[in-house]
Image (cartoon, rainbow, N blue to C red; front, side, top):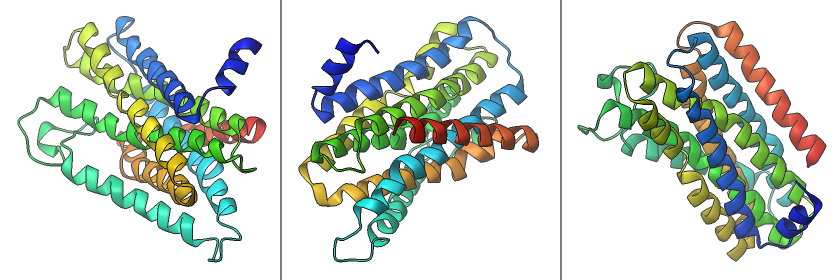
Length: 274
């Protein structure tokens, strides 16, 4: 960004920075969803590869941007340094499992009868959007916690690192927006409605981002737990939803390489910028 805009961004409070960063990631989701205005059909291999790529980015972000800083922040606290990240990581997974059990949703490629969560009469299209929305809760939370950590001036929490995380999440949000809007288009839903539903799947990111930043700013002791919590939530989503969806058609070699590419790009972003 231009120097004057970068300086203005640096001068903002971490909560506002988190809000702007997650509005950016929401915007990238909308950009991916906008693909429905260009085409109605898309290769299943391409769709699966994009989902796997997103999963690779999320795995890398979970370690490089969240777990590694959480472990470093836990050192010298009077307890073993592995306790806060371990507790936070497992708590994030349990949290997402609880939401998974309650929120009605339907994974891409499955029948309406395979919907998970509380039984409801909601439309298939709504359930598909809610499945992608589950992906975006931990993503927004991760970005918010990363920016909230800046309030304490810790050496393991840098603005460059938080920005690289937001860029990485934005990068993988494009295929997520694409993945929710295109299946709806194939089912005959109008392009405008597909776009609206696709981009709405990421509306939770700014909300989760602000909550995450605010929570760690008012309670510094929870910071390593919060970072690991966001990591655990993202890993749960990747293992439980993203990778299985990407490999459902049987193209495991292509999707595996796409996931590795996503991991590598996120790792490079974090190491180079963070």
